[in-house]
Length: 317
Image (cartoon, rainbow, N blue to C red; front, top):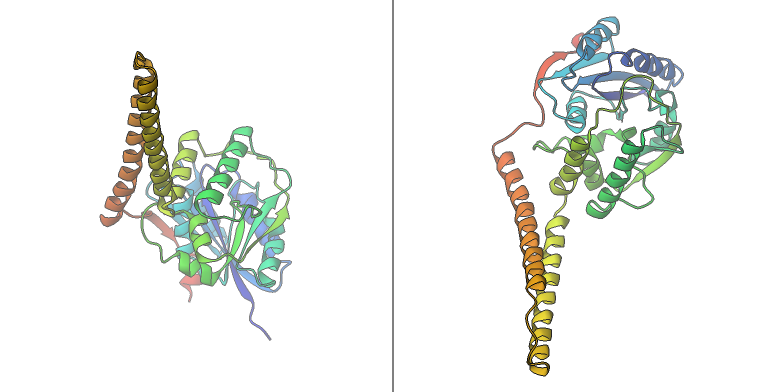
């Protein structure tokens, strides 16, 4: 008889003290119907200011298959995912949200796709129940990953996905700061698919992503795993230099043809301001890359664990 595959559910938690219990119950109920799998759950508290960590402690005490991790400060969703993956040992890792919007009862669809031979399966949604701001952020993130990271246009990326262990092991080789899960997946494999699931409306609270956090996520994505911004800067610099050279030739010819032509002060200042701004932008971009190299050389951690509650199953091994 073939051994059952183990599924590790990794759930980053932030302001979810009122929703976690329902998510755990849904996972338990669903996995009871999938007799080909065993499972564990890893809950990672990303230094939530409410009672999320107390809820995680209670869930760990009541269930012998739950591991609880408390981070020392708010490191972000992707760092929390990496922390959870490092403490998982399943043949398959499933990542989902803590608010119940990602339907745990449809995890079988993702697992079936992995059974078909895909390395990673992302959930896609016919209609998302996020706010307009969050949907706009998702569209910008989709465009950024397609341009900067080479994501196929038809591939939809979401926070609900299943991934095989060998891909997770490759992702965990990345130990530097600025973890970006999508970038780690895309650099490991292109054998990725989507499966449609229903996206639910939020029942409690609001999204933890502010405009500042979204900008930080986008900037991290294209500076941590792509040098395309530097190449774009080079191309823009060449275009500006070429434009300046052609404009200089045009000015000389115009001066020879029309001797009394006066140089336009406003046009000159506009060009100087434009070129100066572009130079500062390029220098800032290069400085960002150098700063990240410096921080990585100083071994800045992806995350720091304040508290670890190992599940009872692992303690008994």
